Length: 110
Image 1 (tube, rainbow, N blue to C red):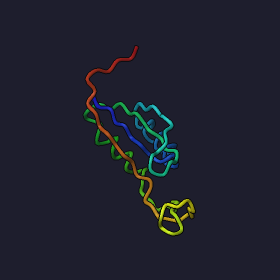
Image 2: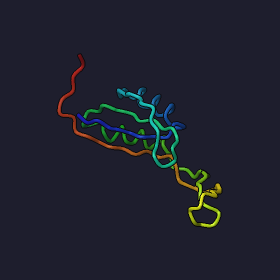
Image 3: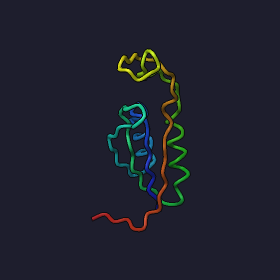
Image 4: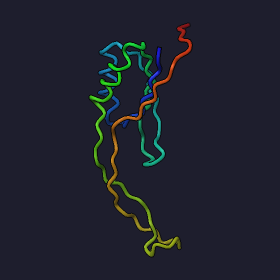
């Protein structure tokens, strides 16, 4: 058995949860916050039999697509850290999914 930890953008989480549950995967949803953009995201814990790992990953890939987004970073007007910070728009790639696939030594339902 495997545990897939999938970190996805909040925007994709509802459709992904529905798709995974419709395929019979057990999913636990955690509300989390990303470090880079400081924005909300969703972490899913998905218990998967070894032979269904590829199917689960394909389901995640079909929903979680990368896209471009404008965000604001703060930099000083002079380029020197003197306290006069000005918002600066930057285009970043968001979305997709970060996946960790772990071996499960033991699985119990009590």
